[in-house]
Length: 163
Image (cartoon, rainbow, N blue to C red; front, side):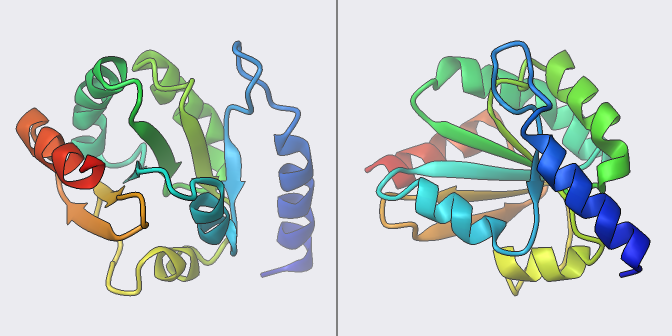
């Protein structure tokens, strides 16, 4: 990574906390090396789902309406959205999240030039196909699913991780 890009990423990470949405929470958090472990640590003993998507992924965008509906109908299920785009797409990411009323969930964006490294930290067996959704139970045993899921698929996974 060039010194200029490293400096710009550092500035973005420092300023990310000041980028507030209407509900007072940070709109997008920078996902860097170590962020995955941070997500796990901050959700100890709590089931959650991690949805990895991109503004350039048409199946991801089609699934956003269903994710919004799922979020509204399952308020106790923690949903974390992770955009596998780079920082330059932040405006588009925030626009899509707001459009689908997902701007109030925990939202992250890849903030490291080496996206392969970030993907590997999440799951060494994941090669980058999108959408990719991970379901974590209380013990953080996880199940990863690639591709678009149906409402019934989500309900089955919730039943699995909530019991």
